[in-house]
Image (cartoon, rainbow, N blue to C red):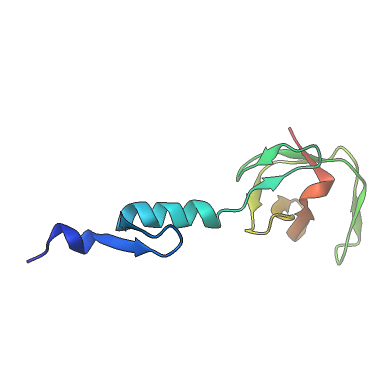
Length: 102
């Protein structure tokens, strides 16, 4: 037989007994990384960004010019890097400091 006490977990950080679902939500929000572009806008998965500088892509032998639009980005968990898809370049990872949100 389960009791209501089985659903509560002790949180070492706050020193409180919390419902397991609330503790999981707190940990998920604490582990999420906020990524900001060159001008301070918060980036999210699926955002469209524009390059603010010409970038030479290592291994691809091409340069992405300033103003190039990257249609959909994915956050990597690193506050400095974003994963991108661009025609002709596989595995493109850009630094957030070189993009601006559209």
